[in-house]
Length: 128
Image (tube, rainbow, N blue to C red):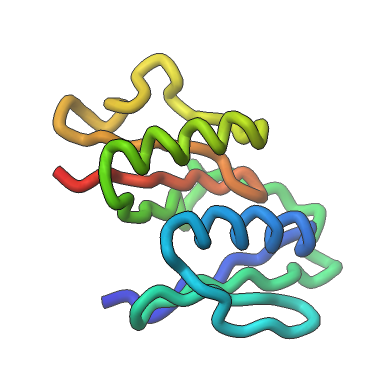
């Protein structure tokens, strides 16, 4: 089981605002908070967002370079995916693979793919 994931943010306030809403919608609760970061926990796993060091803040991230591609989260249901999709659109978040949504992962994979802070690809998947 995954223990935690740590993400660096160029704009910490914006990232915390997004993840506070998004992870709250998935049932995560605030776990820790300090001057340069915050974490949210669900069960034994937590996600950390930390302010990127000044010397790296202007470096571009792209999910197709070697390294992390995306994070996928469990949804409660297809209706949960639909509601999150609606809220993401209201927030002006870029929905990826819009032409194939919500089956961009295949006919038996109901999910929403979108760009979070720093353009990291995030996915929320309904149970099969």
